[in-house]
Image (spheres, helix red, strand yellow):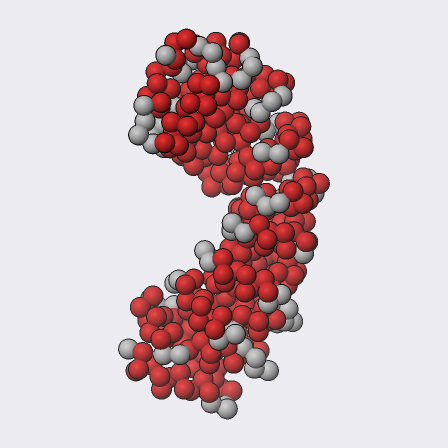
Length: 371
């Protein structure tokens, strides 16, 4: 198939702008059809040719070429190696700063698709200077541009502390906060997703989130009907709660009760993240532990020890261990809630991680029945 596409791709090298435009549009449509067709277009050498058209002075040609590149990248981020080799990423990053809205949108879409799940491509995008332009797009009064920029940022910072720092330094937090306060769910979702990723970054990133007032709207989202938004908000709070300097703010904003309610969710990921956040909030301070116990956390956490999900089991055990540590009343409440049988089963698990967390719970309590 790749050989049959070569005559079409050669038309991209025409000096006629109309030929370039219609050919790029055709390739964009073909690339959107299937992964197989997209792979054949890539194998035929489309990337460097489309990359050259990105530098055209004709805005329509730029849009069509960028759309084709975005469609080709949507099937697998692994194809990004071809984009890096053809040095396509720098001109795409520059087009994020175009005065043409459609050019900006398609360029952001290319970046979002390339960055998905690939650290190496994210590094190339950052090196090309894309982040400041993406952050500027977050502040546009254009929902589609904002969403595409947010997707690109989420994909870039997924698991990379270095990129997280760059995003924060470029000023992304405040426009993301404005998106979080939107009444539109997709705006809220992509902003809370991005903020959750940023909360996993370094101390500067976390401090910037807290000082920008992120905790209050994150706590409100814990009561959202959308389980994905609940999960991302709980994950962000769990990340922040893992650092002592943020605990008091989280507690004062009323995070405990909605987190405890989330333990009863039917969604395992929501349960997991809620238990994780509670575990972090229950570290050390007696008043924090008391508030969590008063909200009814213990029986709910004990029930989660019997979950079929490893992550839920481990974080429930971690939370219970933290609540029990140094507090005989909490120990007694944990035993009364029926923790011993599921704990014994966890200690006998074939999964080493589950055994470790169960052993931590056992080690932080002093109940002879555990033996």
